[in-house]
Length: 171
Image (cartoon, rainbow, N blue to C red; front, side, top):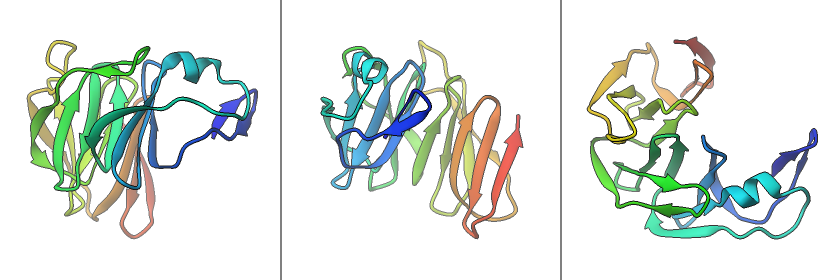
């Protein structure tokens, strides 16, 4: 679905995970872990139900999220990858493998990157710039319970704990 004129309208595609990141780009993965991108010309001009043209990236990730300095993904082996994407064409640079392991990665519209690992620990990537999209280090954000999922935007980290509790954390 896409939010248009105060209402949600359906769009084509069967994605198990979707991310509406910075730079007006929409990316996601399907049940076979194929990676897709929706060009900005489609995301900004799509006014009604109908067919849209998803661009396939030719790789496999179980989670994919984009922001202004790059797109981060996690594959089925829990390896973390980053690439840069041109949202108007959905073209990408080569993949960079980043140290660590995660079950999901979240990129905020300001470029902040967070991951959650299998044990439910949350880490934030530091040192990210336009010229160094993979950043330099991981800093753990401590929680007293295992985390299932995070989402970040507008200076707030939204956290869903494994027990179902949802938290809003301000930075």
